[in-house]
Length: 239
Ligand code: URA
Image (cartoon, rainbow, N blue to C red):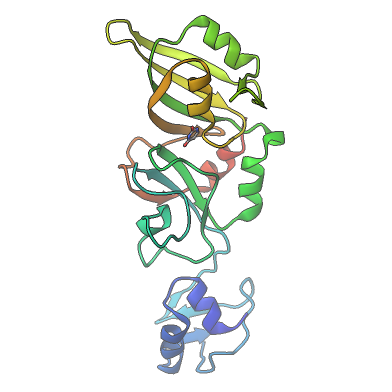
């Protein structure tokens, strides 16, 4: 890979900016100042420094975002703010994408990565990776609803869902509202809203709280993100 690309990939500026760093003799390869921006470097073998500090090459990036309502799960959009707009200039990369989709009004755990293979595995219904949601519902959920969700229900009179789990946490009889969790192994379009609607009730609030065995970090403010640890990345694919 070209030296300027290597540095730009690692977030040290645009191609133009990093060319300047190289020209100004601030970059060394294997302890020798390098002034040729198209010099080829091996990202795993060569020792690259900027102002004497090692530039460690990282191919994949993994972030947990606590998605707020009001932003769309897309990379760029001309009209609406996207989840990638939340990223700082330092962390933003063109190849980052969200893993799956949360509706504009849904909050909570969203993984953002440039590891396309991991993303694919997490979303494949065949892998049965669980996604758990906290749901506030207008209406009272019943044990019959639990049974219907568990048996793999049809939504909109057609589409068949995989068996899922409905856990009723709290029923407010007076206001006719329910707080529940729903655990899915897939992610159909508006799936939870459509399931709840089919059961004769409506979703008032939806938040994703878990993917695989990775829970949303409660310390992470709404609208904030942070990198995942190695251990957290492995927990994503645990069942
Ligand atoms: N189900 C929905 O209806 N919306 C989401 O954002 C996620 C799951």
